[in-house]
Length: 178
Image 1 (cartoon, rainbow, N blue to C red):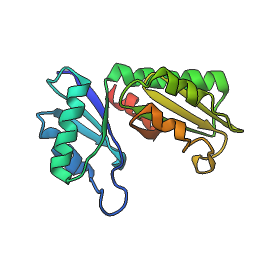
Image 2: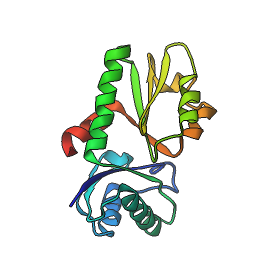
Image 3: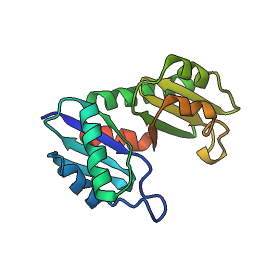
Image 4: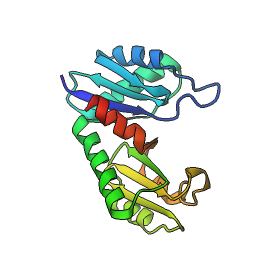
């Protein structure tokens, strides 16, 4: 059975979008998934499924999460090799640009259109850099993300649905699950 890593977007925000890890695991298992594991409370899930397509896994999980919670939970699914590639890109970017003070990776549901990638790459701000590699947007800043001028740029919306994690979380998931 293939293994997948799913990233849930916009959960555990405020009172109305609670989705505890145990409930995530139960809803994930409800689609016939096996070997379900979660990591921290931000919506990181490993599962094995007989489904052979990440898109089918995404759709099944989104339906299960909606049924369980009563609200939509956008879900982004990667295979272990795809997630290892994201981490390899993180290391390549660090080698190219130096160690950033903060590095967030937004994992995207689909490969973004080239025009959207070009628009994001054209954005500039002192001490910040945005780089799109495949289905990942990297935000690297010398400081924290709170002061970022690029983090909420309107051009980012054209990349499509995504969910952000720190580079350390993504590295940890690769170490544990890939």
